[in-house]
Length: 201
Image (cartoon, rainbow, N blue to C red; front, side):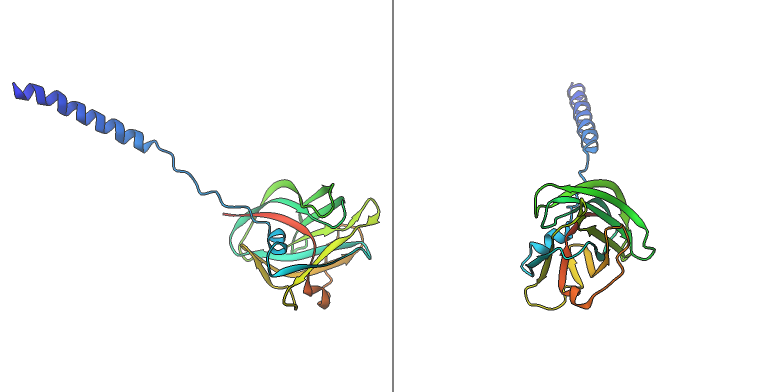
């Protein structure tokens, strides 16, 4: 008599356990979303750098060399110049000087960061790249910003998140030409500013 009562209860318990186990196995694991890194914005917003001045004495391709400390991808390019305007921002392979990505940024508000989504570009740890912005817009040389270290001296090398910024380069003119000139006194400033969004893997 007892046996016929226990078996259904046991079977029910087993079925319930199997059901709960299978449901727990269907639970999706959530991936950790890596935060976007904007190195120039992070540095100019930190306590280590301060605004120095603005300049527009010529048309320049204003470039900053950088390398990631981890693999990742670049998903956006942009700029924040002192004057509003239409600016060309270019991402280069530092070694080959090849153009990897290029966008035109319509910065409608002075001194306001404007970003444009690009086809994501995979970048590798310790490889060197360059991001540059040209300060000429509609045939006029527009103002760009210079930031210096609060304590003085060379800005470079400087770390922003997972990126190492290693130096400033420029080329005179409005053409999309890889910046190759390195002026010693310019290394005391973060100049432009171009911007990029880096997402680590």
